[in-house]
Length: 422
View 1: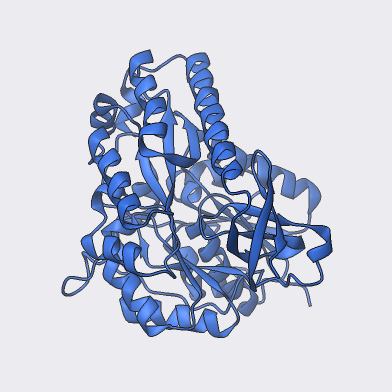
View 2 (view 1 turned 45 degrees about the horizontal axis):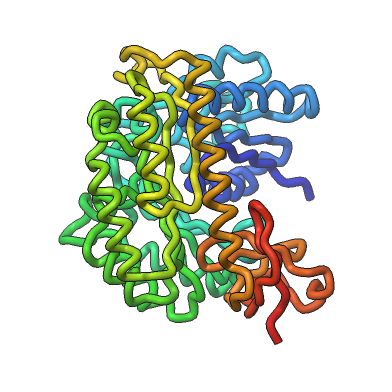
């Protein structure tokens, strides 16, 4: 029986929400639908979404194309003006079963995008699984109350709101019972978790509750966090809970204090370095990823050099580099811009730095025996999220979803080579 197709662009939260929509669309009988769950983090992401939609229409002329996600929320008219699009659905509406029931009727409105800033509650939508049986995402928070000068996402996601801990635990247990060895907690501004819930329940307490009440869970991982808002319980969990993976992706954005101030970030350069030093003292095997923006407005060569230097000073391993891209309606779009060629060059330099530190880290793993969560096609991930290719001879013993003791026998620029440890 044909099923609705969902194309996910952007973040891990979108991946979770795509699974919810897949279930809603299937239940509503939208078998001929293609749902495009868009991202709006950069203008390039929005351009790619439009390009994806045009390609889909060429490839599937009779499909019903439903566009949703952050770009549909923030630029609904742009997508409504595209002749390839049948329906535009907002971020608030996309998570409701009744939206998809309505879309199955001939009288459904073409554009359904309401005021996301009026949303005040976050319901958890139970799902049974993802496409694979290795890693699943669980949404614990949505929205953001901060107003970084470069960011459009709060206007796509609305105010910060948290999923009650009991519901999160129930969802995690359900996924573990369905065979998932690793759960990733995800959200827009995860370290704001719990502020809108009764009592004091920060992210660290949620992490400890999940691990306590779901002892069968092998691995718990966090998506991006704001290091300056990491609570004490989270740091204790990092130190004490072996099942909390030693891999933190930090929303750092810059290594220069003046740039951070103009971004309206809530941390300084020294704050970021101190956090990494403390986390490493608590969990010596922890590795860090970070988001960094190259070419933010007014960024000088010296400011950029501070961002490049912080890679070593924080000991970052995985870099996610964004060339600055002005988003209409944000304060940064009105600031003096860095020339596009300079932005491109700085992004390339940061990416080259990222490639070098990753290759260095991987080369140091040779000879170690580590637990690897096996994924499809003889691949897997270490606790630190490094990718591992198993040797061809191990294909019969490596089963997706299992955690295998693995000896690292080689390292390339982006991946490790492992063999099952007898």
